[in-house]
Image (cartoon, rainbow, N blue to C red):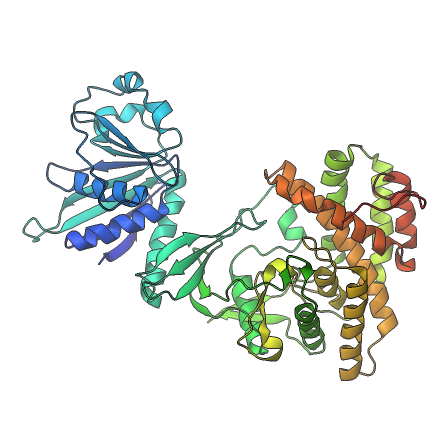
Length: 528
């Protein structure tokens, strides 16, 4: 077992350390697995310590794990200086610098070329320290006091980017050990659109699974307006606290949000229930019955009186922010900042931009003056999981609601029924809008169906405008071009929304300034 991990004081902002005790060979093997799951192509790990301290033993275990071959022959590279192995993720370089006189000798070995996309393990790094990149993980092994040469004391030091990774690794080990998941293996999962959040699936030897959400505090971005960064203006969650609060709030209402097994709020780590991966769509698009249940869930949620502040942990609360005019406007302006120049290929003057903002300000007025509810904000097919073994509305599993705000009930209905990644046929959209309205009216005879229809068109138009900008930004800024394939679908939704009288003035602006997006009447709209 890995015993007594303790985070040491940082020497400076770019360095962190962790001390681990390894009492026997089995503990060393388990520790090697922990390290192997963390390493990725381009990483450098240096192993230091005296003769017989266990550097080669640990390196050999790491090579076998990274190569996926427990029987792989891993000879000491003392005389060859360097051994290269093939791995499923990247090459693995195992080097021993004991016989080197200095870093200059690495040039003759072609060190930089060999290790560029490899995971590199270096014994005796001090012999060529001047030639190694500063961002790395150093592992120093020493004999444990009183261990009769059996136990080892390991000091891990992360420098540069490895400092935060080491802190997170320590927090992860504490979390899974505390929750009884210390024996689980880690499997990476497909990334979502987030640039700061990722997930891993943990699998125990008995086959049971859980999810690890890795969501460190969002870094403060540059000020874009009145001294505030975009994320603050747009009311995006800055810590994992928002997810915890909304998760607890949804489950308290009887909905199927993931159960949280354990958390480290400071590190931004959550160990949560694995709801599975059964979708609400199939190869033909939305599954109507499942979409209907997802629509009924929103009707039930929106019909309740909901708190505006939710508990996170003892002494910590999460006030749900308002989806205010400032947030709604900075989102639609993403169309001007990213979609128009990079997809349409045109530039708009300051006066044209101002007209756009003024028209949206006027249009959004009636929505902002109406009653608000929990707007989950990402309530669409990628974040809905079908749970056939549960009953009623609990069959709709929900994830990715950390950016929830207090806003119009129409927004999430539009998010579901104008899904950015799956084409929702107009007839199904209309049918489910009717289902939502009937459920709301049955629960509350004062529910204004006409006002909701107007709010739906406005919020759907706002959302489509925003997403065109977001997907263009994901391509140009974040290197995720696969989002561009969804643009024709979102353009079709936007054209559909602009046909509503509530967006009449805005339709004129789009027709005048983005004629490629809004074609003349005698031309068909873009195909979905």
